[in-house]
Image (cartoon, rainbow, N blue to C red; front, side, top):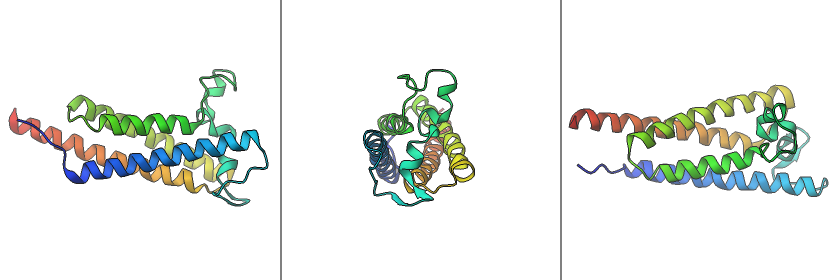
Length: 165
């Protein structure tokens, strides 16, 4: 019995992952532009407390602000969060093409990790940096939406497995 993905899921995943990739690539562009030119002003820099470049270039903009405790700040292991986002959304898009239970489990697990990271970074944004970052908040929303999509998929695959098993 061949299992096919619901049309809504394919469209939702494609939209969410492409939007997440665009935001992540833009965040990387802003960070690299700001590092090479401190005077660079990004489109998402709307004011003193609404500045994505301030967030992206803060210590929490690389390795969630945690990796630097284990490796040198300039280590290749301490990548910008946007690079992690590019990897995450690419994996979500690629694995989303598979209808296997194993892929569904990995999609759900990685989504929970992304949501935990989003909650952590949102708290840093609000309580430590005192800033509002539209790009960041948009990725948090995308991560929650991907979790919902992945949980629906996992439940549907488990339902098909019970009916056929």
